[in-house]
Image 1 (tube, rainbow, N blue to C red):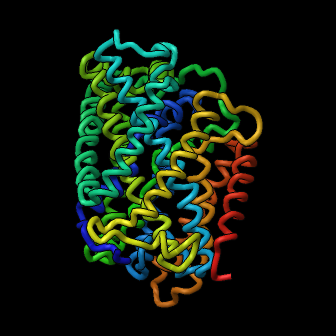
Image 2 (spheres, rainbow, N blue to C red; image 1 turned 60 degrees about the vertical axis):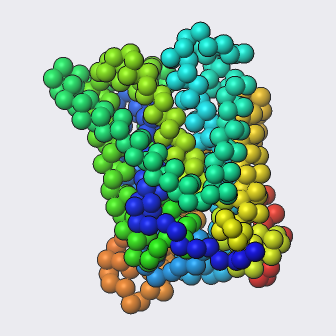
Length: 460
């Protein structure tokens, strides 16, 4: 066994990881929810996408500055350790290994399965399912659960047995997922302007059952899931060729691509269907109206591929988390989790831990959010709240960067970090207002997991 990861990914793969992880299901999965949260107000929904994108961009640019100075084995942990200290770096690593990456990976595996089944049913309406598709079989049926577990195992196996092929899958799915997004952005805007649908949606509000008391906060909070994931690209910084040069480029270039694609896609969707139809039926109705039923149904296949690419990118980061902790001599059994297989150049034991924890989060997600079997206390949305907590954990890193980096210019040392702090604080506040009691249940679970992590902290 060897204990060093080789540099095997270039700039293009790094950009594809940033773009491919962020542009996953969120733009499809949350688009309908965001319009609903704004009470059917399309301009307000677009504003929410812009605010969420701006927050992502200032945080991303600030971390790109750090990536030019700090490099070890896992960007997020490296930056926390270099700015705040080794103990904070350890707890950041423990958080992303046990909560952040696994909860997101579980959700994306489920979304991959869900949209794959919806595509199959759209092509073959007679496809037999134990729970019929019309009754939610594509969402909570046993076929969906079985396919979710297969996706988890498949992306795990691909990244552990052949990490280079995992990188190629990331690149391929990123290119493929851009096809429907670009097509809808261009054709949807032209169609909407010609038909008058786009102008109507910008001036007409749809009817929804209930509207949040703070629609802008609630909708910006919902964009967090769609915009999150870019930081995962830093988890492979020690495997990127000329990382201090290429990783900052990948983060910044990828960030601008993401925001542009999201905004233009969302406007394109608004040109394809009324606000009411988008709320009631989702973005698929816009594709169907513009491209016909056949091409409209193929959208589900593109969404499934998009989600698969995101799940793969998440697993790429997730499988390296315990290794990044063990590389510092921390966590449970650093010698075991710090091992790198000589033939595959992957930390296999760390990846096994990632698969186990991800499966546990999927079990919770299914019981509490999908099937509703688990109700009452300790029910929260694991697709949003772990993302919000990571923004809270960014704040000390930004503050310490400003305090320590005396050689940096005003823009890099103060302007961008202050904007990143303001954006992160906004996300935390939006989460509290939007999720309310769910924040308390999540905070308790978070605290328990972090206390468990404290038992394995060796620097104390």
